[in-house]
Image (cartoon, rainbow, N blue to C red; front, side, top):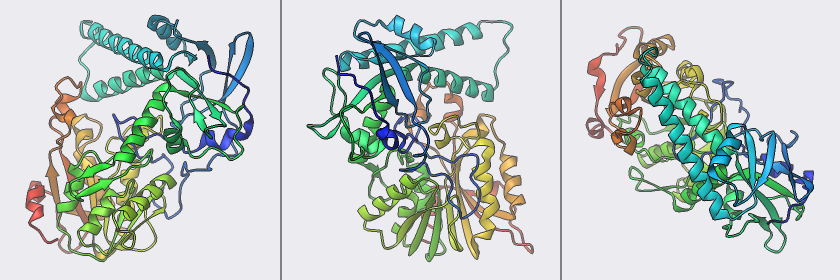
Length: 471
C-alpha cells in the first residue's frame, strides 16, 4: 500500500497547469472556445499559470480508519468525482462497473499492472453494453431508422459515457524527495515524472512529500502516450522532416491536408498568416515552399510554444514565428491559411473542442474577418473536410452562403481523399460517411464586383493538378 498523507495547497498551480489534453490519440485536439472573436486580442489561453487564483479541487476518501485528501488533477477539465473509495486488487470488474455507473471514483492502491487490466475490463464491458443497447434499439419496431446526424450524436453520447466510466478509476501521485519528482506509489508502477511534467508542467520548487494528488488512470496513460509522440516526432512527408507535438496540440498524423497546402498554387511569397497554427506544421510547409515570412497564431500559449520550438528544430525560426492571438495578427498578408475544426457541434470538453466548432463559429469568424486582413490581391486558403455535410450536420449551401456574405469568392477548390485507417474501417459505425469523405482546400479572395468568380463544379481540381502550378 502507498503511504497516504494530507496534501498542502502549495500544489495548486501545478494541478491546474494547462487543463487541456491532446493525448487521447483517437481524436487530435485544438481548442477554440465559443467566445473566440475575430480580433487581435488573445483569448483565455489555458496556458501555464492561468487560473492559478482558482481554488483547487480535491477528493477525499477513507482508508485504514483515517480520512485522506488529495488534490484533483484533470488536464481536460473533467470534474472531480464527488465520492471516492479506496480499492485494490480485490476489486472485480463487475463491481467496478457498478461503482462507475453510480459515479463513484475508485482510487487504486493495488498493483499498477492490475489497474491497467481492470481498466481494459471496464472498457470491454462498456463496449458490450453499447452494442447490446444498439441491438435492442434496432429490433424495436417503434423506433424509426435514425438519420446520419442522429446516429452521429448517438455515437458521441455513447463514447462520452464510455469515457466517463473509464475515467473513474484513479491513481495516487506523491512527491519523492530522494528522486526529486512525482511518482506513482504503487507496486510495479513505471516512472511517470517526465510524462507528468510534459502534461502538467514542472512541480513547484517547494514540493513536499505530504503533497498528494490523484489523476484518472485513463488520462495518465494518455499523457504517457502523448509524451512518446513528442519524443519520437511525427513524420510529415511534405516537410521531409518530423513535427514534435506538445501535449494538447493538433497531431499532424493525417497528411492529406498538409499535402494540399504543399501543392496548391502559390502566387505570392512575401507574408502569410496561419490561423490556429497548433504545431506549426502548415506554417513550416509554407516556409519550405519559399514564403519569406509566416506568422502563426493560436489562442493557447502551449501551441504557440510548440510551433516556435518546431520552427527552431527545422531551422526556420528566422522565417516563421507563432504568437498568441484569438484569430488574425496585426496587419495584412497576401496569403492567410486556416484549418478550422471540421465538425459543428457542442464541445463539452477541451478534447471535444479539437474537432467540434459550436455553431461553426470559428469557421464563420475566419471567413468574416478574411477580407479585412488580406492584401488587395491576396488569397485565403480554407482547409475543410466535407464529413459534416455527409453526416447531415451542415450543408454545402451554408458554406457557399457564408463565403458570399463575407464578401468573398471562390477562385478554385482542390480535393483529396483521406487515406487514414478509419476511411477503410468497415466496422466503424460512421464508415458510410467516412469512406466518402473528401478534404478540400478552398482558394478564396475578396469578391471582384466587376467580374465575380462564381463557384461551380468546374472550380475543383486535384492535388496532382495543383502540384504542377506555380510554386
